[in-house]
Image (tube, rainbow, N blue to C red):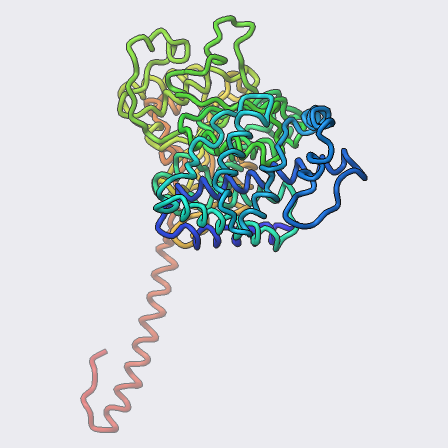
Length: 534
């Protein structure tokens, strides 16, 4: 399927969502829509593998019953062995009654049992389908919610309509697993666009994700040498729906990353991220996403005290909540994440997020984090943290982005690139604030804008009014203030005025003026009119 067709599929599904949700909040309807798309993906993948496995024994039937339902009925003694094989091949099983094909048949017939079947199906996927723990995957999907209807009958009818319309929309296209993953991403973006400030909780616009992903996948010591051959691990400690992690995987290739790690504190977004991984063909053994508070470091894996077992990551990307108010506990002063740098103020946890991620970065790794511009110049404890990072040679690049790129805020943001061992002693400043296109109410980075940012970082290019490498003495002279405008001026130099040439031009203009006045006075005299003084 071409990119155009993928966008068309996403548009069709979004139109269905926009039409069917009625008065329901977009965030609530998003969870239903994306869960059904996820079930379609699991079912398609499962049935494709089952068909290959069973070969000629795969039933060829039409009607209300699906092929696997028929096979289960006719081969009860072989079910256990069949499911063992399917677990090896797909890492999960789905009981035939809960496959998308059967759900659609129930919806088309307006079956009174659709709601109960969906409830059982979601519970089955959470508790039985996967070897690893996927409990709570559909915890935010309340099929008995009054938002779907006032009583059971109305809710069942509404679900029948939603499922049937989604199935109809999907049938207009030849879909494969990659396409469904792209459609899922498209819908997440569309719901984010309509979600206002709440969208910032789960979605990083694709063009910004691409910038971060391309940076962290380059060689950390010599970015000009190109992309790394492999990343053993990549972490996003505020992963939202997982789009940043998937972008890194897309650049590295399916076999270019050992394992993907993410952490997310919002339960709904956490579930979106796990679905998003599977929808993009990332097997459950290839990623690990933890639900918990990053600032409190609730993930036991990261709290490992044995240095030999403590995880460190080749690449870290993050778009944490901007200037989040938090309540640091008294014992954080001894926390190894903050001990050498200080604790971010209660009013803004930006540096707390940065230091958390940086603590788990490998010596040869690269970290790229999106933060508000305030981290570059704010005073107090933030100034002390910034000064320490700079003196230790941890800050590699500062990139200023255009304003209004995010759905959640219109403020301009920056990307900080950090390394524990960096080759250059200076800091590269990139002022990319003017490189964008305006699309409706939103600003977007164009492909050429993205390429320019990445290429400038890659080759450490210096360009007037765009980028500059600044040595540490100048940074020190500016009291460790990283405000980009101090180092890269956007002001255009005025052309030099050449006095002698200008006087000559003025003399010529005066001569022409006198000649025209003489002509005017000649005509005025002939006509008996008053003349003008020369």
